[in-house]
Image (cartoon, rainbow, N blue to C red; front, side):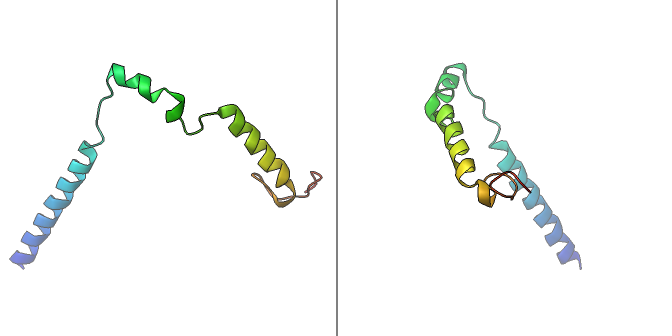
Length: 79
């Protein structure tokens, strides 16, 4: 019984230690000279937002009869 309780306490300590170590790695500061690199267009999810908006519009227009990027319905706008 005592051995089982000791194992449980050790397990809890290990879990807390792993949680603290994993959360501690997320706390990094970005220096002022590094922020310029992050603001470049290459670092964005969509480097060309105008083209991405156009491609979303084309996709939604082509897939309108099957629902596209919204709810399903008829191609004429009917429900």
